Image 1 (spheres, rainbow, N blue to C red):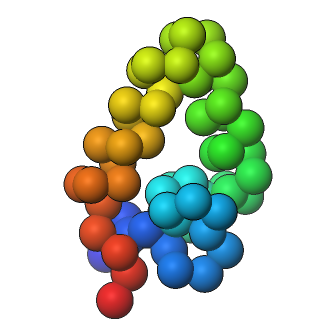
Image 2 (cartoon, rainbow, N blue to C red):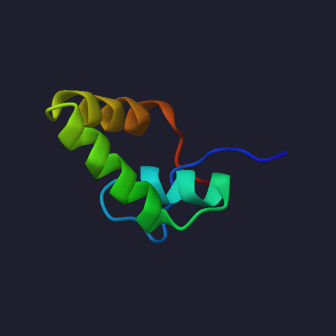
Length: 62
């Protein structure tokens, strides 16, 4: 069973995008680019708020 974790390795800020990349088997750079596009399209508030919530909710890998 796969579990979603924030990664300690390959992290840039909090490891959220690296964890999502590993969970979905996608390069973390793609996730980061999509997150930046989402942030710019939503005028900043949506993407930043979603990242902060993800940072709080997703546990760090053991």
